[in-house]
Image (cartoon, rainbow, N blue to C red; front, side, top):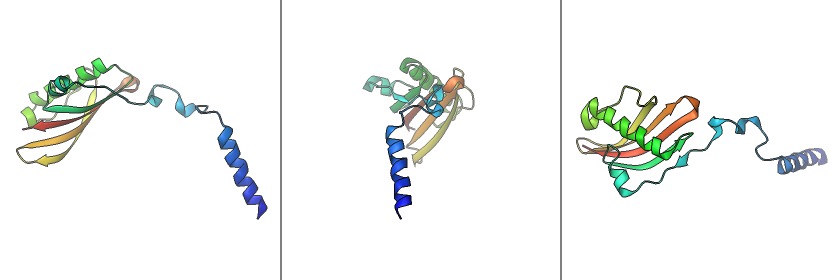
Length: 130
């Protein structure tokens, strides 16, 4: 009975003293955390949709993230109006979207993630009133 307890305590002690960030999985641009970009009320309303209420970015600037969002929504409007979808790359980013809270003919909410080589990523949540 003592042997398993000693093994568990030895492993716990090793984990407690292991240097943080010493693994190779924590390095490189893909390991960077998404950073939230603060948006003023005016910016929330002027990014090409009714409201953008969350904007996060990786390996790019908040200014560039806002540009990508604006270009993405312009592409959506060009391909079907307010209810349209963007089949093209925008500013070199490939975007995917998931819609939810759909009220037929009224509004919907969506998450959109735009990715580009080098680990660049722009994520935003928005509401579109139709």
